[in-house]
Image (cartoon, rainbow, N blue to C red; front, side, top):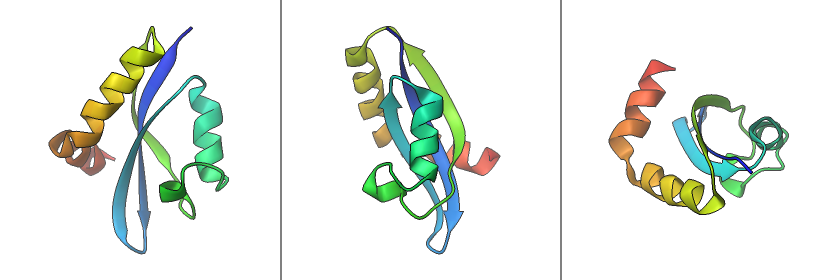
Length: 82
């Protein structure tokens, strides 16, 4: 089973935002975010994929997600490239 860690980016009223999450099905999850059925923090915006990684286990993906959420420098760099 493959798991994905991903980072999304979006421009809106409050400026540019990023979101980090993990999932088993990356395409389905991005579609959920854009349909307004994703996490509360992602509702009402159009999101684009900035970055993704594949992991072998759910535990590894969740661990990496925890680190990416706290890496503000990487999130800012990826947002600037978008």
